[in-house]
Amino acid sequence: MSSVCVLTPIVIGAWPSIAAAVAGVAASMGFNIVAPERLELESQQPTRRKVQTEIPESEILEDEMGSERIVIRQGDVEIVFERDHDGSLKLCVLGEKHSKAELERIGQEVAGRVVQQFAYHKLITELKKRNYAVIDEHVEKDQSIQIRVRQGY
Amino acid sequence: MSAPQFDIRIDKAGKLTVKVSGVSGEECMRLSDMLAEIVGREDSREKTSEFYGPGNVRVSTSGQIHGHTHGA
Image 1 (cartoon, rainbow over the protein chains, first blue to last red):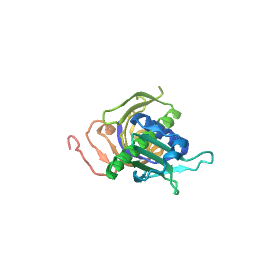
Image 2 (image 1 turned 180 degrees about the vertical axis):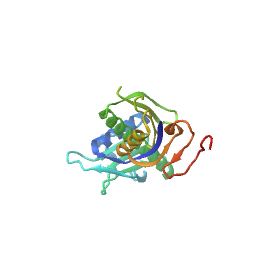
Image 3 (image 1 turned 90 degrees about the vertical axis):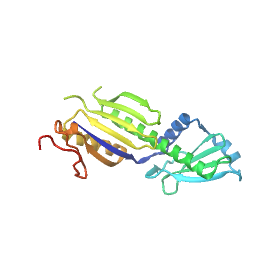
Image 4 (image 1 turned 45 degrees about the vertical axis):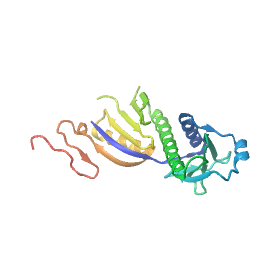
């Protein structure tokens, strides 16, 4: 007996869990995390194009301990993730050699992958608490993650 | 009865498709509710033909009948 359901993740979490998802995506997509001191030096570059987007249905819980900002870079493209004033996760994509449309596409792709990583970690963490174990896992050519989970393993 | 099993696909935009199997109909629905609660929002749910066993009926949550019964 079985059913199939389609689910849309809601990204709610403290900043460390979001930063971990961003770091995972950066590593898998060939981005580097930019150190904050370098960012300060390079922040004023008027020739760069800039687009902004946000992850829908996201809520970053306030963190009193640290800064709620992480920056990743690949070539001339830099993506700034930060908590917006309304608590949602905002992305600012900057680049010199790309058109605004290209920057927007890159931003959407990276945002999607962050949601994917967040959903993966949340689901696996919660299922393990409920005595489920991953018995098979792989990434398809289309970058989807396929996981088989079974209880009592 | 075998253990509950989830076959999960998370696409590159984060959307999840989960097949729940190995449990009775009522338990299957309970586990689907649990997954929706963990992840966020449920967009759709469909009971497959396996849900009912032999008979090849497939009913979506909107109540539309997509298949047919044998011997009707």
